[in-house]
Image 1 (cartoon, rainbow, N blue to C red):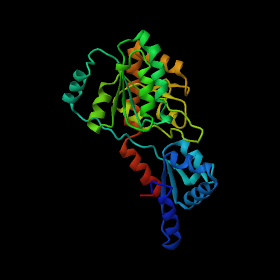
Image 2 (tube, one colour):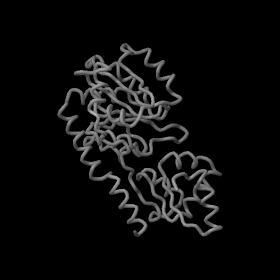
Image 3 (cartoon, rainbow, N blue to C red):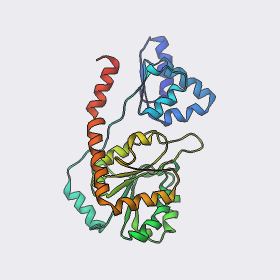
Image 4 (cartoon, rainbow, N blue to C red):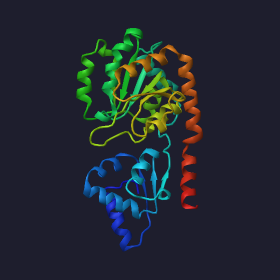
Length: 287
């Protein structure tokens, strides 16, 4: 089962009637949001408590579940695997390079829903400092969401608004092409007052899969997806200055950027393959 609420309620009730055994996958928001409300917290605890196993996307989420009172051995961490694959389409990649006039220009890329938690505006505000030393930098944003109008308004206030491009929702093939083109992948999420936080950040692994250095923020379970100083740079959340410094550090040190990207790629291929996740699940259930 991959949805604790509301689907989990039906499965939980059915388990008493049909003696059904079940396991639950939890990812982050499906735990962090309901635990703030007494009724939903009670229901969440009972659904997860009756499960044969709770499979958490990372240790951050696993600890939230254990804090509900579940025994440690009932909660198992199964890291997700990158969804975007290296789709071989050099023609598309080159077409995008030509269409946006990107020859010899550094490219900053973010992939994610345009929502407050993702922290896009931190990057936008950091760009002014970056442009003073790297005026050719282009910033591309993939994704849609309710925060788009606010982000577009912020873009309009920048000195080089035409160098920030919202690509909207695009298919996997084009996303793969942009990951191939990117110089740096960046996403700087932050925890919100309502408990919403980045549970893991699968997109960091997808960028690493393409050999890209990543910049992330220290929140939620991000530090499990990005190893600071080894596969990327982690800055404190909501820190515009640190974000700008991290971007410039990678732009000024291409050998460092290449090393971080290479180490990230090796880590993803060894530790986050779909095969290894499937085997881990088999081991958990004794298959």
